[in-house]
Image 1 (cartoon, one colour):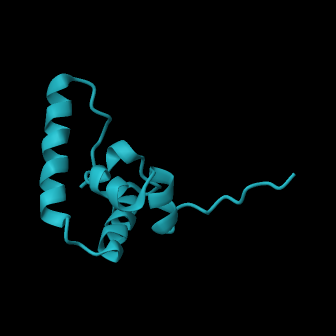
Image 2 (tube, rainbow, N blue to C red; image 1 turned 90 degrees about the vertical axis):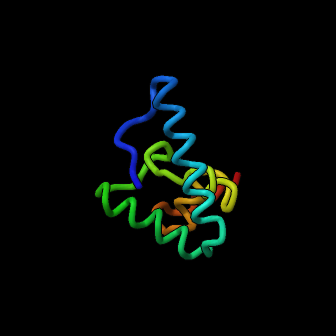
Length: 86
């Protein structure tokens, strides 16, 4: 599920929290592959790489994989940046 904009009011934040909780309950037993395919699906629906506030399920994804950039890397939506050597 995709959010169209970043929540800006208390009511919108409450709705987002409810969506996150429902997603986590429904998908907590999903495999890593299933969750990463979900992120890829969201990207396809948007026609671009999604921002974390656009993806319902961000909380579970962060718990499972770490920071958003790491989620995107694991889903194949962002290249792994190599640290420059001095």
